[in-house]
Image: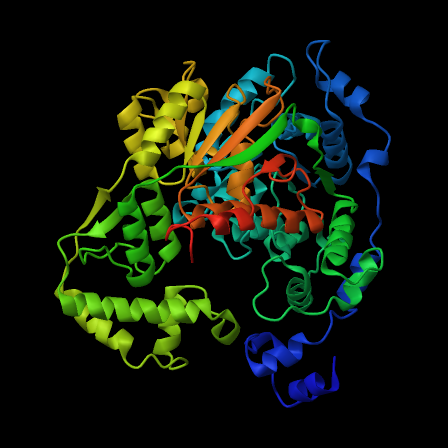
Length: 587
């Protein structure tokens, strides 16, 4: 700790409770990561590459196979052997890499009497179907209790674990535990503390982006054997030095350099910490491209819109209103409004609100956007945080919030979806007929309109179309319309090989996982094609920012098998986008 930081702490300033964006916060952040007792514990943990261990494939295949022509994958055998020896494991396997078979065999491996399987609700039926299929070739568990992680988080299931008393808990899509303060994780932790003998196994294809999204899971599984900091102060320092998302000033890596090859650069440090995690017993990381049976081609296509859409986008960007004076439903996010207009529609307030109501709403929302955009000065992310800071007297808004709260009840707005142009959905409809692929939509409004135009099914809530059932049971040879979030996890959609994205999601997780539904083991086409529809600059920024985030994760050694990196990337570059004319491309 620097002399100045030590003096400040001596004077009663707590580094933990000092805002990082403040002057004192920057003083504390100028100190490098310390070499603490927790650091020494991590550095002293044994290392091993599971790939170098004696292969267990033959032994475990012979134990579980029902028929002679099946064989465990290297990752599957290694994970099962690790669970057998350590009675826990954190498995990070590529999309399509074989996690489901591991989950089906673990209870048999351990002779579990009360095994519990946790996953997202929308994936439980799919898992049951896959277990039935696996049972024809493997000696799998038939005694699982299935529960959704959403249900585990509810008040009615607060004591569920104590009532069931499972001796084995297997959590698929383990990134559902990313929040250490979420009810589902807290209940698992309390149950583990009360019953240390319970075996917990976590599997995922996409571990968290930042260290504090999975350090608590490592702690839950491995206790003192965790390769992540267990002390909150130490974890905070590591995160401030190496997280992908760091607010304000980044802390110098300090002692973290010792975990890598000696390089002090951010990528070197992330790689060193990632390798430390991966090589720690209790972790099986299998992130190679070997689980992809095809190449991936990612490109974009521009859909031209009429001049009237340029006028709408310009009015939305500059004034957050339509040219006729009507307001958008969305109050704070310009990019969301622009993306909706880029697809041809918007959610608007109709009729036009009174002028005083509109002005008060506009002034408050402009103030909120200004505060949130100035992260260095305020460090606030959401409108709710800004409102709370104003109420506490930490930010002077000149009475804007009080005025808006006074005026808001005087008018009750009605929201309606209004279509201004059908160019994008007509383009997608023609693509579906010609290419017979999957059209991915982030906005249900677009999916419903496209289904209306084409007569094709729209698989949205829980991956189900009201007429055709689940997408995996859909056997027609036509294309299909697919909502991103309900279908990005756990779906086996490799009988399609062409994908079109309208309004692509900005999250690297959502993009990588949804591409992985078709670009996965069992894909028979030599190439999976992914095309992003570009109509506004925000669409291009979503795609490119997701790839940049995936590159940062790879530098951390966490997701080398991201489809956004294992592809022929042919998306337009910045210079090309900057050359495009009109309000839809200029910011």
